[in-house]
Image 1 (cartoon, one colour):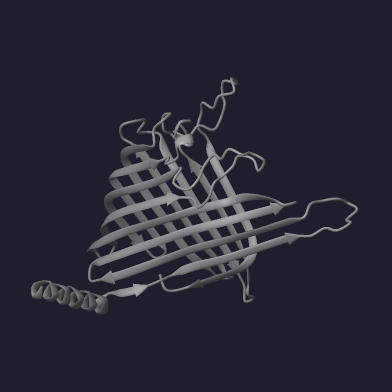
Image 2: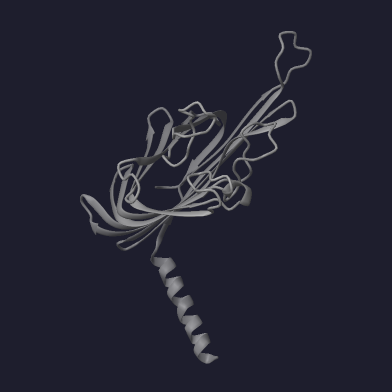
Length: 291
C-alpha cells in the first residue's frame, strides 16, 4: 500500500513539474451564422426560410523543449428549415493530433507522428422526404495514423508520411449491406496503406480577412498508387470592427472508391467524382489565442 502511495505521489509530482515547464496555447475560431425569411400574404410568392450554422475550430498546442503537440477539434453543423421541413446542409466532426520532435531549427524540420478521426453528428438523407438515410454517425468514419516529417514556416505547415494507415468504418448494418463508401457489401471495416501528405495555411490579411486552408492527400500503395484521394477544406472569415462577420466554408473531396456517377447509363453508379460542399453565412465570429 505504501509503495502504491509513493508511486502515485511521484507521478503527481512529475505531472505538476511537467505542467510548470510546458507552454500551452489555445488558438480558436468560433462562428455562429443565422438567416431568416418570413413571408405573410406576400403576393409575389416564396417560402418561409430559417438557416443557422455553427463552426468550431479549436486548437490546443503544447511545447516542452524540442517536443510539440498540436491538437485540433474541427466541428461544423448547419441546418435549413423551410415550411416545417428541416434539411441538414453541413455536418462534420473531426479530431486531429500531431506529435513533433524538433531536429533542425532553421529551416524548421521535425519528425512527426500524425493521427486523425473524422465522422458526423447525425443521420443524412439524399432528399428531405426520404425515410432511408444514406449516412450517420460512425457510418462512415475515417481514421489516419502515420509517421513522417514536418516542415514549418510562418503560417504554413507541410507534413509528409511515406507510411500511413488509413481506416474506413461503416458501423451500420443496413449501410454496410449496400457496400457504400468504398467497402464491399457486408463489410464494416477497411484498412489501406499508403503515402500521405497534409498542408495547412493560416493567415490574417490586412482588412480583416482570415484564411484557414487544409489539404489532405493519400495514395494507396497496394491499389492504384497513382490515383490520389484528396480532401480540401477552405475557411474564410471576414470581420471588420463591427461584431458581425461573413463566413465562407468550402470543402471538396475526391475518393476513387466512392462511386457517384453513372457512365454506362444503366442506372448503377460506376465512377468516382468530385464532391463539393459550400456554406456562406452572416453572423458572429470570435477568434482568440496565439498560434
